[in-house]
Image 1 (cartoon, helix red, strand yellow):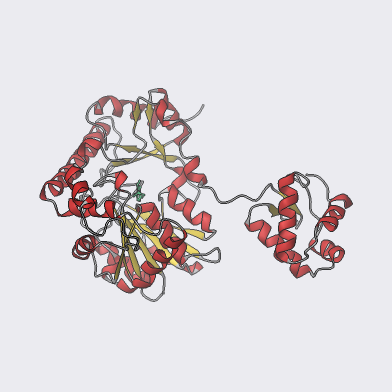
Image 2: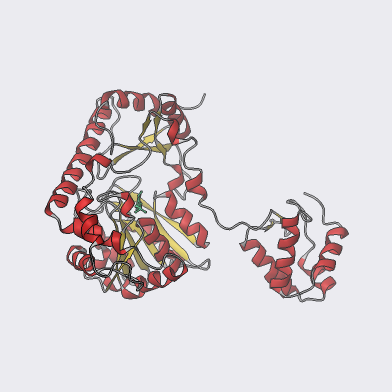
Length: 450
Ligand SMILES: Cc1ncc(COP(=O)(O)O)c(C=O)c1O
């Protein structure tokens, strides 16, 4: 760390022409980007700089806050402030670092809970129908086209005041979270959860507070404990949870609603495998519709390239998410909405999705049974994958990688420190070879680094 020589202070005095918080922050940003204040440079104290540029300490403090939020400077425990680097827009750090390898290098990629293309419904007739609809290519935003609204209203696990179609499940979660949370909010999140959700919360700057899960989903006692930080929202998945595969039974929904009863915490629910999950649709919205937003993504059941999820629930939550769309896509293509609407009403497509759901369950069961035959007992829960505790996550991932098999390490889905680790193995595209794969997983399971 360079010392805060008088040189730094002199440079700042010379360069700062606008002594407002924004003016000071912009000057520092420019100097950092230009390399005049390299990472590690110690900045003068707030009081010292304020005195030298004729501003109040409050003003310099406000500038420091802007720079801290942009991750350009850091104040250490002793109160010294140091340049970290050029201001950085948020990045999805957990997602970027999820796999310590390139998926393309693997003979067998079991790291992703993705549909088997051979099990998806055929799109030809659906696309032709969608293309023929009279309002295609009109410029009015299509919040949700009528046939999709009719389907959603009948299929939703509660009476939703409002519906909105967006571009996939994570788009839905990001819009709902951004509509509700700021860096001054805390949010209760089930643990483990999907790393991408944690990235979304980090990018907003909200504080994520973990709510531990058991085999029935979020633990009501853990949710109660999380209420101590007064979260604005609670986010969880209802079925075929990623990564663990659990589905929340109706009596757990009742218990979670009881915990939330005397609060005004909003509930954001994610159902990422409707039609595929074998458990029934549930929702806290059946008890608290006025504060629940429920997301269904059709990527796993009907096709990832439809890029469609529906948000349905309390109007105030859905509308806030919808307003944010004026910052980006505006609306979701009527061609894609129409394609999904056709598939949801078509008996052939309905049968096909049901067949896919049964097939994924049977693949998951076959993998679980092959593991059990090798003394690795894990509950086959729901959805497309298997979640396994291992002695060392890194060692297990590496041992399987040496066999050409990619699996997903579980650690990045946790907020709390864990002992040992987990791997998630997708069975969604496994059509054979269960014994061989179970053999490799068994070998990886007890490995540690020596
Ligand atoms: C937890 C979770 N939610 C939602 C989705 C669906 O996301 P999208 O529709 O954006 O592909 C996925 C897919 O991987 C998921 O794992």
